[in-house]
Image (cartoon, rainbow, N blue to C red; front, side, top):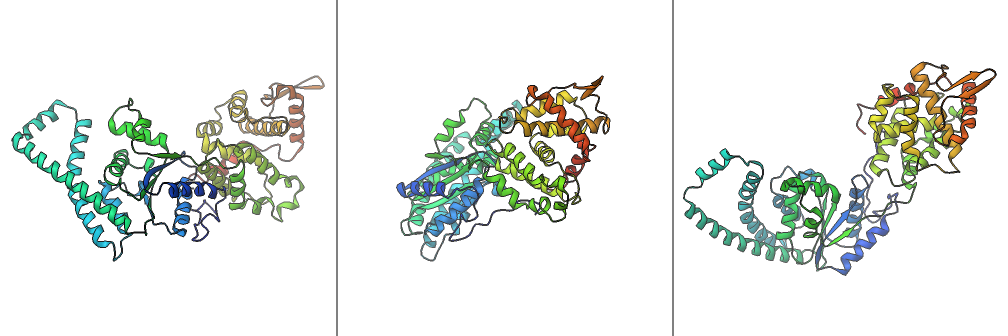
Length: 466
């Protein structure tokens, strides 16, 4: 498996493949719908890459299983449309039956009358915002001949448009009431924060002004922070309070709680079948490789056991790590804790990864940069294991720069004694232990490895999308 595919959502048991235990949160949201069936706008607000799309698709199927009519609309995939009203009505058209089709057609007719005036208004608004030049203003003055006639026409069109909106909402309410025996329609709008900024704002405005009718519940799946940037961009000002702006549209806001610590990386380990490599029969013939799986999982727990790394980022790390692992012979040294950390920084800190690859860092600079990722994760239970990781990482980087066994930058002999020239970043009080680890590694057959050997494998994945 090269990449993590979309999780299959099954009718009748939509959450059976959910590895994050999120069905209970869907039950909470369904309870809100039952409590307020007359209609509202719900925002599911979580960061990008936290599994919102998978969650709303599973929840949508659960709603269908409970006889709710639903619509799923991916705003990002449809922002090629200039007018969201066209796309939103197109989604509602999928719900038409012989019984409610006449009502839908009346709503569609009024929507067409509304749309006729939307695009010219938008063009003018964008012109005011982005073409603030004297020449352009002069051109507008030249165009605006016959102001009185145009004003009278605008007044008439305003009255016509207002009537069309009223008729549209009346027909829409009737259509929805005839769609599902009195149960509310749940209209899910996903990826709103990823589409074109002006398209996102238009969707919000049209939901508020055209679709605020009984028995329709809009669910906006968003990263509120990113959507806020879009709003500021459309209105051309960082001074706009995007939270206050969004409060005009959103009645209820809900954030899916973080998954249980460690749950997802264990799932990814099994999904990408790392055990097929680490626990293969041939690999188990080499005693020095016997603990590789344990070391890989311990480093996984350290890096992904908290909520700092998004689900999407975890997927990418595990995906490239597993893909690159295919280029190793079954008896090759992987040094899992170093290998996984390199995969981790390749995704989360590409600047650090490239500086290591280009040999731009001194040993001390490398230690300082690595420590930034580990400082909040060190405790008495894992401290010594991390010193082993530190020793491997430093030694392999040193070998990469200066060649195998040229370790004069790490320690030196003074008579019969060997003294460290660096301090442990994990715990300087454990310098003697760090030195003993260096000695131990140098007695092993993998002591001459360098970090470039692992990075070459990982870099083979760069031209493959994951």
